[in-house]
Structure formats: structure tokens, C-alpha cells
Length: 237
Ligand code: ATP
Image 1 (cartoon, rainbow, N blue to C red):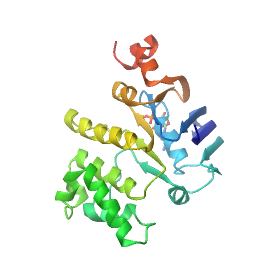
Image 2 (image 1 turned 90 degrees about the horizontal axis):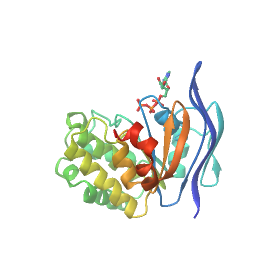
Image 3 (image 1 turned 90 degrees about the vertical axis):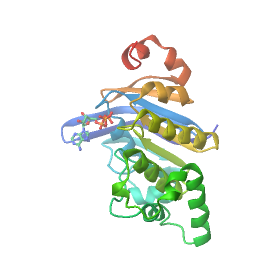
């Protein structure tokens, strides 16, 4: 199995606050790996460091054959990293279509862009019905669809999803997670940060549990679902 992303001894600090205190994790090609943990555990900071949105205080990040610790986010996008940020980050004053087109800014061939758009619409038919609607007027779930669609437009080799279920109704969470499962089944490699531990563990091939900046447990999704410590702390049992 080939390793797509390899993180060693990653540290992230904000001034004097050590948010991530030296963690190891990896994602193999084709895997859906979940990173779960309570509020403030350091999950988003980990993803931001991987995506090049902040510079790590220490450690190594290898994506494909590149040491990426110091690369800016746009170069990581070129290498094939797609981030769907916490809070979606859609361009609110732009239409759905414009948001999706922004995701394809590295593509020059209009035919390839159109093909990718059709693929996104096959996952999210609702977006096709509202192409000219301003993204800022969409519901949270629809904005999540736009954010995921925009990332998919760039044909990422690794998709980083930060809390896709946050603030969504149960039915919308189901819709979004069905797409995540389908993407994963179609071969997409995914690193999913999620507070909804049960949902994340049910679909993850492997998972890591983060607590206060450290990884405290790891294993297959099924192993962690059955682990009594995980059940007590994260599954409300
Ligand atoms: P959540 O689910 O609430 O987003 P998380 O596990 O993703 O939590 P992080 O957002 O990575 O956690 O936060 C880890 C720690 O770093 C927290 O103590 C948080 O307060 C702190 N932190 C995050 N961003 C900043 C920042 N920009 N400046 C200062 N401290 C920060």
C-alpha cells in the first residue's frame, strides 16, 4: 500500500499555546482516515498545517514525494491537495457556478472543466438546479456541497474535509456523508476531521483520536467503535 501523506512529529503553536504537540499520522492511497476528538483537541490545526495554511512549529509533512512543511497552500493545491475548510469558506458574493469554476482555476481546457462540473452535479444535483444563485444565500448544507464541489473541481489526489457535518440538520448530514462514502468508494483518498465520532468511525478505514494536541488512540474504525475508552469518551456510552 502506498503512503500518500506522512506526518511525523508535527507541532503547531499559536504564540505560547501549543495546539499540536508532536503527532504522527499517515494516509495510504485510497483510504478514508478519520481524525476525531473534542473541541480544541487540535484537529483543525493539524489539517491547516497539512494544507499549508499555517507553518508548523516542528516536524515533517510528506505528501506524495514532496516535503511540504514550508510550501504555501497554492503549491499544495497544484500538487493535488484539496481542502474543504471548517465553515465551508464559499465565496458568498459569487454564484454557485463561479464558486465551482474557482476550484478549477488550474485547468485550462474548457472541455475538461465542463466534464468536471458534470461530475460534481452527479454528486450534488441540487447545485445544478441553482447555478446562478449567490452562494451566500444558500443553506449551510448547500454551502457544504459548494465547498466540496469546488475542491473536487481541482481533481485532488487527497481530499481534506474539516468538520463537514458542523451545524447541519441530521438529514443534510446524511446527504453529505453519503457523498463522502461514494467518493471514497470511487477511490478518492480522504482525511476527514469530524466531531461526530460515531459517523466518522463507521465509515473510516482507519482513525486517530486526538486529545489536547496528542494522538491518544488509533486503529481501524471498527476497533475504535468497540474500544471501551473511546465509547465512554466519544460515543456517549
Ligand atoms: P474544534 O473542533 O473546536 O475546531 P479542534 O480540535 O479543531 O477543535 P483547533 O481548532 O485545532 O482544535 O484548536 C486547538 C487549540 O489551538 C485550541 O486550544 C484553540 O483555542 C487554539 N487555537 C486555534 N486557533 C488559534 C489561533 N488562531 N490563535 C490562538 N489559538 C488558537
